[in-house]
Image (tube, rainbow, N blue to C red):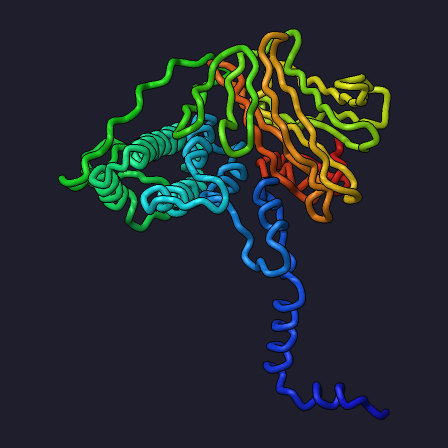
Length: 405
């Protein structure tokens, strides 16, 4: 069968040359296909705004540590989860410069500590394992606070001291939790002596004891994040001030979630939650059914409210919204509350692109001091991927968007 001159030329090229040609065309003609699972809406927007010339996705420092923390959310002690996320909150926005000490914490020491916990097997599930990971997270959190303060004060000497301490404390091979070696007289979990030039920073004060059903304190704050206050109204943004502390929920009422969105936008909103027994459940509502309220807001503009109520006495939860991958991105606002006078407002974006149609808008952890709410604004391709990303794994699935409940 006769072939065209182009086909003949392709046949004469070596295999490696043909591959190189195809790769070059992919680089010059369009961006490589990426999987945005676990990206924040800000990271995805920064990538999409770069045009065809942007090949490397811009991601915030500590991105992988955040993904790793979320994937261990149901396994780690709640305090360790909150401390790890508080450390990651010290990262500057996408595209801004970051100091070397803070970058080492976010890109090396925090993920290494989390991986050590994950790789410790059965030891991680013991009370000793929980105590060790909490102690190490408290230490990282304290060092991060000291580094953030030194950077704000332009204190180069203090930054060198903290970097030396980080190297002395964390730069050694680890395959699991930092358990004492045989014959080591130090108690389990006690850090080794630091170098004389880099003394260990003071540990944070011990948290107040929590109720038996919620054994962890509220997350501390770092850097520019404001302290979490109890009560009132909190507006939580993705990169600055993403966390708030609400009063404990009324056991008779539970936690209410209301999603405000423009009319005409078909959205399914739901929440996945975990009880203290480990059982996982779902609640859901949609803007196309009777659960959705239509209200007039502003100068005659219409708004749709979709509402879900989470049951009382749960350990943690995530609020998730999904929309079809058609049309432009949509701005929505989630209101979470435990009482009428205490709410958290979480503005977010439904990206509505293939591979990013499901958004985890917010997450919550019930602690002895109240409800810790965080604006997540992370995208996933399916509900199942979102649940896996936040460690809700004890679920039987009929399809990637349909749990068997």
